[in-house]
Length: 79
View: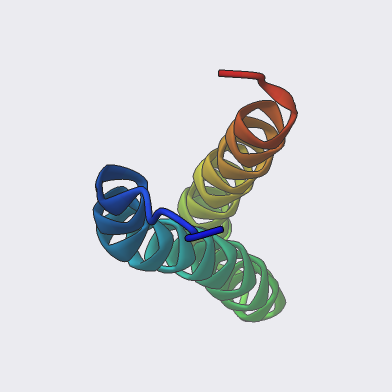
């Protein structure tokens, strides 16, 4: 028996996997950046800047959650 290779799926994996890794890494990096800079700004008494960094952290957390949920939905879907 000869195994067949689904080249379309393989080519899709070649661009989708690095894109997913990049999205998850950048979004989690935004969470870390926002939280740490917000803490520093709050400690220095710059409340408005701290609020802006909290917004960056929240946006990163939302992107991260969306990426994780999207990945899970793709894994459990049946084609």
